[in-house]
Length: 213
Image (cartoon, rainbow, N blue to C red):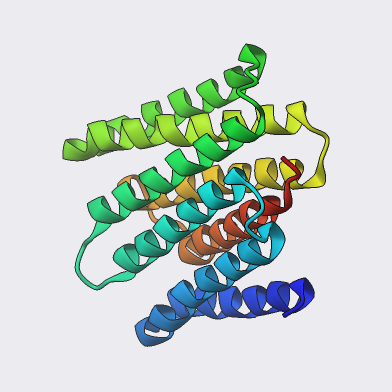
């Protein structure tokens, strides 16, 4: 299967999942949301070919994301287990980005992500209730993921590293939109926006498995 075909299938299935979410067609969503992530995993396998530790760590994160996808779309509220699955996925992404950068750290690059985390927590905090601690921890983790992805890109000029960084940014956008929609206010087209940015993020991170490390 060629990468162009995989990308095309991802785009088609993601579009179907976004349509299903927007129109509240749950049976369709139950099919196309996890199917899109399965195709993203196939893309990672194609790009990485099992050649590096980075590939296996990112693959673990994608598999945990698939579990999170299933938990978050179930009719019963499985938000916390889903949150835990994605938290673990982010931890694997952080590990992968850090390993691939040979533990390169740039303190200057952390500042914009720290500002992002503080702003999100301040805006969400009054509405979090019993979810204060989990959401603060999760926000800190996605901030670290974005920071490590930026350091990875600054460490190497490879296109897959740039793909990982852009993917991490899209993941931050998706998670922020999800948190805002759940804890603050629903907004028009929230589900297509959340899913669209999420699938772009996962696709770009999967494609980064081609990183030469």
